[in-house]
Length: 121
Image 1 (cartoon, rainbow, N blue to C red):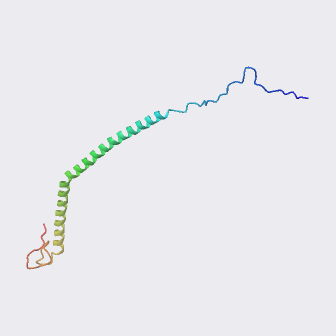
Image 2 (cartoon, helix red, strand yellow):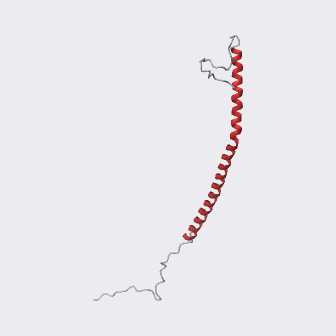
């Protein structure tokens, strides 16, 4: 006796279509927009860096010139200080050696026949 088979068939009207496409949500700007934005920010940063470098160069030049103009003033101040100290040393030496006859303050303590004694201002 033959067996009766019941074949499984699709429903009438067919199966509904399969959704195989990806439907991902929008996740931000495209790569081109990101690249252009990065280039814009970097360009602005280099521009500002250039402005700062110019300003630093100008400040360095101004500092150098101010030092150049101050050199005569500082040298004059140093000369006045040396003169004041030499006079003070001579005064102190006079006070210390007042009991010794023939002692000349500021004169070299070494005597020779060449006559090149040290002289104080």
